Length: 217
Picture (cartoon, rainbow, N blue to C red):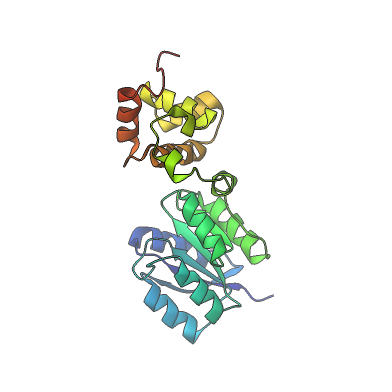
């Protein structure tokens, strides 16, 4: 059986080089190319369609997720997967709607990345279960999302926010709750979004100011 052909498009040079090297060193895969943006990836695909294209979510040319639908329509035999340094459940939902069959966080160890690629090439859809769970979670209504009431947060989110206010890191919260650190990061992202703030520090400040949680619990 010939090796599966893989294209990488990512604007982070160190990650791109590391992933390309990983693909090259795996006999069952053949690297078609490793480029830094969407346009050169499209040029390569026009010259030589491949089995799998790994596309950075935030690289130049990836203006919105509808690009994936157009790419999928033009190259229906090429499986598309997003790679990203951000754990973004909305990107997973949008990507799946636009034809991707995989989402790989850049934080994954090489053996996990290879296992995910094998799964995708076998015909399955690969999304980390933490992301899949949050991507399928119903969104709060706009009025609820802008509310200051803690009822807009789930019980788990209030628990995590309480520990954040108390000064615990993501790793410490994960250890305390018996969850993966990536799961805590995803919940923290959702908390930030629901509270209508920009980052973790602002979420903590809002929680303290509006007495959304009791850090002494």
